[in-house]
Length: 125
Image 1 (cartoon, rainbow, N blue to C red):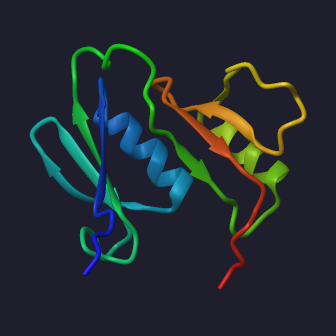
Image 2 (tube, rainbow, N blue to C red; image 1 turned 180 degrees about the vertical axis):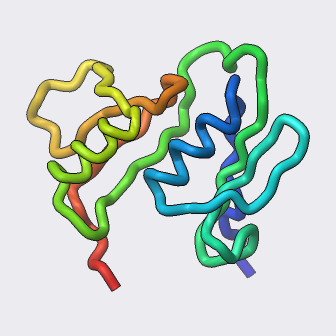
């Protein structure tokens, strides 16, 4: 039996703010709250078809650049339309040394966590 990713844990200053942002981005819902923490995922919650994301309050971000980031694939619109939607939700463009020839966009969430918007590779159900 192999393992699967059950949840991703992200330390942040404002779990409620990031939970709201990522719920809008991913179409997730809040599936649980504990003191200083918010968990989001599909309505099935932890153990469902997708990993949950657990936002845990931290006073200071971890030192150094995070080695983990999220790659997003649009499922119901093209990359340009999804980029516009993400920017309206509060994402911002981030320069990490791109050449301009990439087929993806590097963005940051409201707390500066980097993520990439790729071209759509997933066929809608």
